Length: 113
Image 1 (cartoon, rainbow, N blue to C red):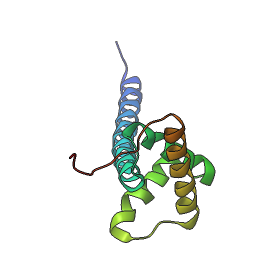
Image 2: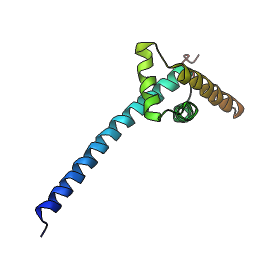
Image 3: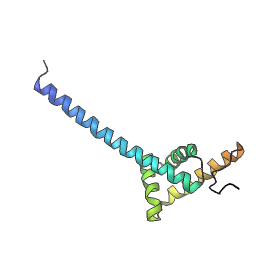
Image 4: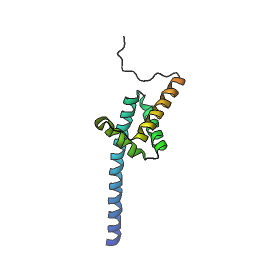
């Protein structure tokens, strides 16, 4: 039979796990939104968005979720930290160059004729 102390420890552990999972879900949603901003602003394919976000994080030494938060707020605020803006421009340029070298077209929203 499980004692009260052991039950209390299990309950505490489960509550901490639920809190961590909730944070992860919110963080994941923000990262997904930021990838959308990156592919829209950069005219990139969806699969390039995560790589650009990861590169910006690495080159600015800022956690991905924090870079993502900046990018999600950027369209409404019109502000983006200088180091993030510089790293984003460079990462988008690398993604475009890589796609061009592979013979891939960048995303175009022009109507077909």
